[in-house]
Image 1 (tube, rainbow, N blue to C red):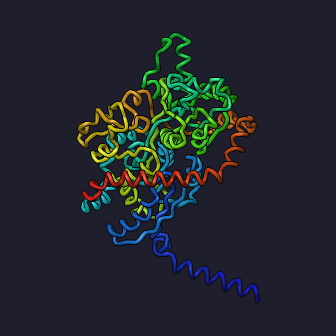
Image 2 (cartoon, one colour):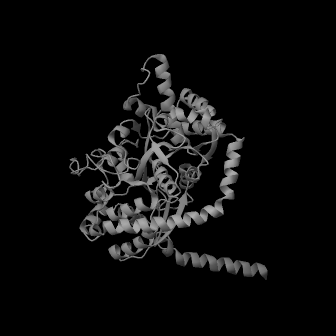
Image 3 (cartoon, rainbow, N blue to C red):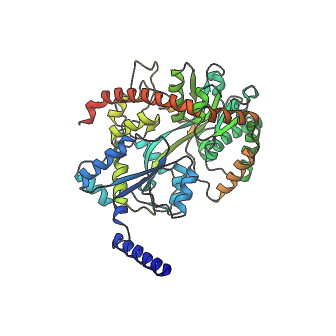
Length: 475
């Protein structure tokens, strides 16, 4: 009897599945669901519900967003590669976009049909992306005949550098990657647990020292940007071994490898320097100011990474139309500004409205040349972009950009680099690292309360900024 009941139950389930699945094999619920996979703390979450409303206004169709986050590119990629995760929109970094294109894991975004549709509605915000950013994306390696800008749209960008405590470290010291090997900073150093973001700048530093030792460079000379760009492709056994030797020296001084908690460690003065991304640095600097801690950020003179994260539509995406609308929605200038407010990172959207919004002569003493970034579609700089009063951490000047380059996928050499990274980190934790982790997790409850207070303050700042921007939102 139980067996017959079980069989009947299975039949009912099968019949329900058939009813739920349309002619294209997609359940009605899934066809009206948009699954977004993004970095943690990387969006103004109010925009999620607003997009659902906006999408219905534009298309007459309802959509519900399932929003999930990741902390490491490779974790995200593994879910996409196995084909079991049918995300519609994902936000990987540039070298992962290369790998996804090479492995045919992406679908085009701005198709002729979709472009015609949004142009007819006068809602094409893809044109708001900086030509400089599009140029950088065009440098990504792609299969023959494919343009990376057809398969990816920029979201945020920045640099990799050193966040330092100005009470213990001078700006001059922080202008060299050699600071990461200063023995007086033992157990006061944190490093991003992101092997590519660490490997590339340390390789640049190591090669600089090599060429100085051989006489190819003078004592204070730096590598050319062309050479730095070439090193972004270098994953040879020789270079991996060279970087490993440097990282093992650094490991003796490192208190921890972190994916996100390094910011808190810096604001609490548990660490004095942190190899990190510019957006995280801005967050930490602002939070530290609230508690009287003086943090600053530099991109070392030897050279570093300029990184880009971008939206893509994976091969296994189901709701491609909503995905395209979502990416377009994120490029709307007022939405880009709100995302910058919420995350501390810099949007690739660089319209006149954005330039006006982020400029402030009251807050900054020196003007920055950003004419490479704020450019009209015809290639001419936006008026005033050559002399902008803004945050130099968020918006690096031309001289900083000239010593940075974009990372590239290492292909089948990636496993070799990961093996090296695992050997460096190892299983043995330094005393400082153990103490740091224990202190961190012990303080989580108290820090959680503090972050709520900080979030409230940030909300007040955001509302003030949005009020400033309100005159543009009704255009």
